Length: 308
Length: 217
Ligand code: SF4
Ligand code: SF4
Image (tube, rainbow over all chains, first blue to last red; front, side, top):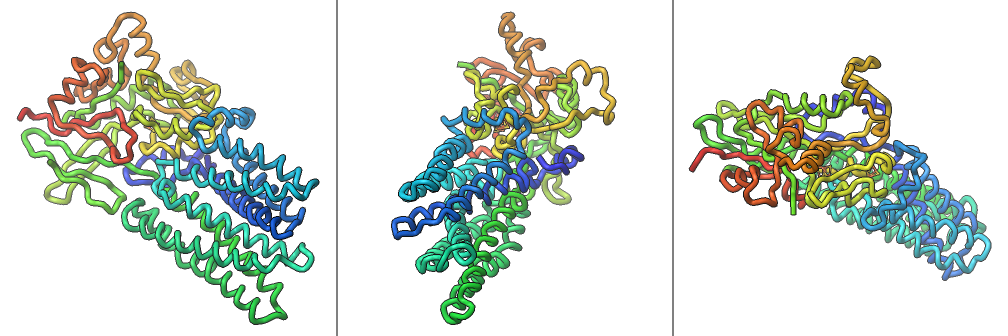
């Protein structure tokens, strides 16, 4: 819960239209950032192991990102001493399932630091973790921009794009000979998937599946995201291909931009385009001898149902 | 079976907020936390404008998304349909708050009182440490309902067994009862008059029903 809310809790309940949720702030977004990027990196590095890629730096970076994400959620909960209770709800909650998968991912990732062959297995819990993250957002039925079924492919595609981006970046900085050739291709494919889903997602939200204010946030973000997080990385990749002397720097820049784009998208979806459902009535009642009247759904585009 | 519900007659509610006040007294909720509140809507455009007062709160949904997301099982649903929070298990992750499409849940981390740090007698008496840092919401006054049932009273009929908001309503806009019993007060109202439920398209099965046409046909 944000400090802002704690200082002025009464303010947020005065309206009828959807208002921006404050229960999950940047700390919650941090979980989707760290978890998405970290698992994206681990999945690609793990699959790369079949092609002979092995790097402790990549494994450590992936696990550290996931760990940082989890830690940032830990900072948000109201009763941190009871944090282990998070494991009780496996029957229904994707948050519990995420925590349980983490309990497999970390030991396996740590073991792969010692026994490189195990790297080939890391993608399994990493993919499960990324899937849980997507389902966490989708299950939040009170936030229209999260509960969309498109949030699933969007979160997964972005996690993979961020992971490929980080691999390119770390490849330049820390791997001897840089990242393997195929990573750039993976980045192009995952960015293409992400922007493709984003276009549909944005269109559905603007088309009436999200409150007007939340849709407006997405509209404002769409152009900078498309260019900065998706077109620019591709431009850098092209540059790397045609200018060998700046190849390393261009690949790193492409990776960085793809990662930053995903992070920005998560900050926007979790903390800025996160308006709740608001209130609505299907009919307004007759008063005295008058007629009953139309419904009312403030803050939404759709026209309320008229009286039957 | 039993399924507790509230029927709110929109034609009767005058927006006096007595139910809001009764709830705040019964639960000593801190500033900004309102388990029950009455929305003041102005519908239509001039000259065809009407004012509607809409009591809202936890709908004790049939399929509560708050329960489905809860990672600790702190949020549960009783056999009689009441959605409850175990304050001793909840970790205050706030997931249920974003999962509830009715904005019915709250989380307060520090003690706050009506007059800043100076609590009223009621707030002092009813202050419950366990509610700090965890999720909280309307309980349909479960203690009163359970007390009534244990003593052979009918919730919704006997005031001692009825939620404080319903008892306090001065225009009889609120009725509490068992929708699974076809002869109950609420079932009779729902049979006789037209009603709707809020955000029903989300599949939550909310258990506050709004009567919108109560004139006899
Ligand atoms: S109204 Fe909200 S808090 Fe109450 S049961 Fe439904 S989803 Fe849960
Ligand atoms: S805040 Fe408490 S009741 Fe709500 S989801 Fe988290 S653990 Fe469950």
